[in-house]
Image: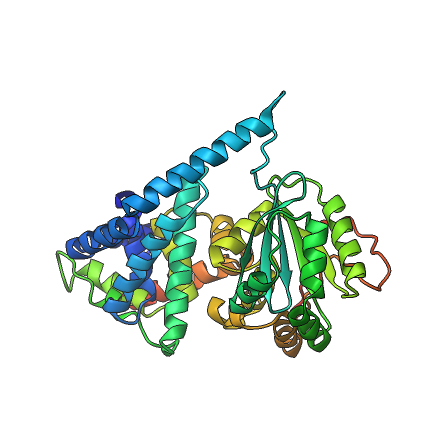
Amino acid sequence: MGRYADMVWHICLLHASQRSDAQDAFQNTFLKHLTHEKPFESDEHEKAWLIRVAINTCNDQHKRSHRNDDELPEGLQSATLDQPGGELSDVLDAMAKLPRDQRDALYLNAVQGYTAEEIARLMGSTTGTVYSWISRARARLKEALR
Amino acid sequence: MNDQKLDSLLAEAFGELHTPEELAAATADAVRKASFVPAKRLIRTRLVAAIAACLVLLAAIPSGIYLYNDVTTVVSIDVNPSVELSLNRFDRVLSARGANDDGAALLASVPVVGLDCEEAVRLLLADESIRQAASEANRVEIVVASLSDGDTSAIQEKIRSASAAASCPCNCSSATADELQAANEAGLTVGKYRAYTALQEAGIDISLDEVRSMTMHELHELADEHGIELEHDQNQGGNAEHGSGNGQGNEHRTGRP
């Protein structure tokens, strides 16, 4: 669990309306990891699998709890940083206000280093759509951080 | 602020966000408990594994290893019930799982493990639950996926024969191993996963749970409402004429505003 724990935690925070939901999704993701039968072909394969399952787990949880799609990820907004209120807090708050797809796409690109094509495969979308999400997300963040 | 500076800021911010220690500990504990196998079951599991290993060795005599238990192909049948059959290289059903509650109930009443896939598909398509659903939906989707992206035309031919014998028309297509993997990770059969991704790409907000509970007919109706076409490589079995496609499972999706 250790190597990708923070990444899965980030994804859960990016999606969950409440911190408790993020915690549940985090645990469920790693329980699904435990029951995955086929061996992973590589570390990259395992990482991509965890990203997909974490996102799907969060989406299912979101639907089950009938939460409003407009609800912001409170968990991300209240995330503890060493310097609360500083520039890093501001960027996380700005991320929290992005639409879900833009948040995911920008996180996977800027933080995890995936290309738009790779993100399209992970999110079940098209490369063009992902480029659009990333571009809009960056524009909104820059505006918010001015 | 340029893109590079923004990305750097994001990486730094998320780099400061670590999994809370109590959550990591609770998760590790949950995983440990979930992986615990009681001693009796472990012994029985090991005994079964040992017997199975002996059988594999016996099957390997006099020469070569037949790899009877290797899954080479997966066949998913979607109408609601939804079931998935895992086949070996001899087209025998090694395992069967229900992709939803109706699928599980169907397999409980129609055991197919150990049968040739043609016989298995015929029995399933002949079952009243599938026939009734097919008559309402007018659509049984069967997708064949080779785990090594091999040729599935022979199995598709068996499926067409089975659907003709059961007098239950179906749409049969092939899928890649990647599609199968993605579908499994989403907890869906390939047919439903294709519908799910097509709907998502068109911007329709639908969850995996909702897709699991919907019939293929309902998914196609939803797609039709939004002007999305879910066309599969049409190799119709049953009373229809045999298709001439090459089983590549090509889809053409169009979304109209």
